[in-house]
Image (cartoon, rainbow over all chains, first blue to last red; front, side, top):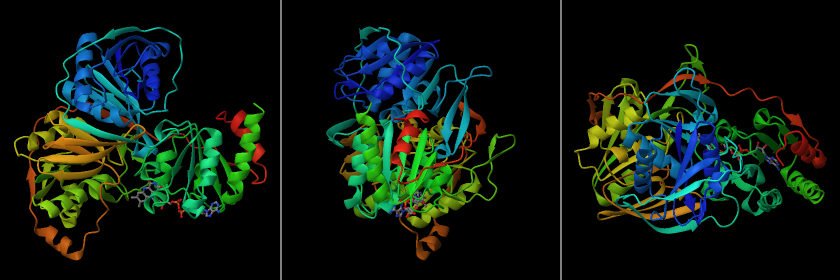
Length: 312
Length: 246
Ligand SMILES: Cc1cc2nc3c(=O)[nH]c(=O)nc-3n(C[C@H](O)[C@H](O)[C@H](O)COP(=O)(O)OP(=O)(O)OC[C@H]3O[C@@H](n4cnc5c(N)ncnc54)[C@H](O)[C@@H]3O)c2cc1C
């Protein structure tokens, strides 16, 4: 089976979610990765890509041009299966490619395809409250993989790198400026996330969240009302109407655990809940619970993690 | 400006998620449908703000059966001028996108707006598919939208930040949080909505590309382990040795 994996690049690096997609693809068949920009994509070989098609002329993940890139790469490789990471760029490009090739798209995969009765992919639906088994009925099949649902594995191979120069047509969307969120780990890619809710009382108390996040190398997140009142920026809002994340560890302090909040975080591997109210619904979804005041527990937890790290 | 807003219904966010018919169908028992929040709060409201400021019309389009009419009337009550319903069951994302693209292709819409995803299927597919089928640029996950003449300026969510982009009309977008504030329809809007045109058109022939063959619930969580708030060393130890996440 020939598999084509689209890997986004930004700031001279291929994206980490791309490593996961390449590993995922390599479990299905022989992977050719396709990427763009001023990058050295040889690292993709370490994750199992046999070949990388690199389009240096394309500088950003413009969806119209990336779609042409993938369509051309499919023609060149004859790929049967096309894998995207379901991140910001992947969402747009996967759906365009699906329409361009009339190839079925299983959006939001969390597991490898099962092929004993057609080609069926398990996907996240209802914001993570359920899964749907989606059968792709076309010859060519497209899968978009939810970031962090499949671990990247280093297998230590090398990939042949082939520069391509397909004509990608016009970029209808012109990028004027990129406002970065500053340093720190981007939330969708973070393995550990420390999150705060209304129970933290005000933005001036967020140092407790930030300190712990820093010690853990984590990203920070928040509940919706916290973003709505403006205590925290909108891009930190997780839940059904915000970002859905799947970190290894989600630490929630002062968040009640409303169903709409849980929808965005219940794919996390391990959930720690800190709340003064033992009846808070979040404890039902938690692996570890601390019934206590976040103002005392967070600094103590931070100290304990520091001690642990110092002894590592 | 001629704006087309794609509207879908979605189960209310507090709905109990369950399945029937041997886990092949969503259990609609007791489920209340709402307008998909991204379609309503962001795409529709921003479209209305734009025509209020600059003139034009907002048409909503829905692929669905008469069971969708209540959500369509809600969108009309919020302020859309008229509505189109393509009279068929939504079969998969491509099927829906193709119906909308076929309807829209020769009608000269300046912007086709969708929500960033529905809260039930979370596919985030329709907008991109429509854009491809209509051969238009697509700005996904747009958080801001302004139009000046034949050019639009938008901000959108990208990996690690926000991009400011510019695009010529016509184009398609998917709307995310930040684009507008939710509007609650008033009594006058609700009354007026009853008289606004809702055009029902027959579907075109399209073969869906995918099919949901079954649903599953996630495995039940094991019970929560409680840790004494004065013993954070124990929590760290469990996270390291038991959960293996730090
Ligand atoms: C259509 C719709 C979509 C929504 N989408 C989302 C979404 O995407 N994401 C989201 O988060 N919400 C969403 N909501 C809102 C959701 O229903 C809840 O209102 C929200 O999640 C509550 O936020 P919270 O837990 O921060 O605040 P609260 O519910 O006010 O909870 C605060 C918690 O902090 C605890 N607390 C108080 N003091 C302390 C202390 N000192 N130490 C420790 N704990 C303390 C309290 O016991 C309480 O449990 C949505 C709602 C609707 C209707």
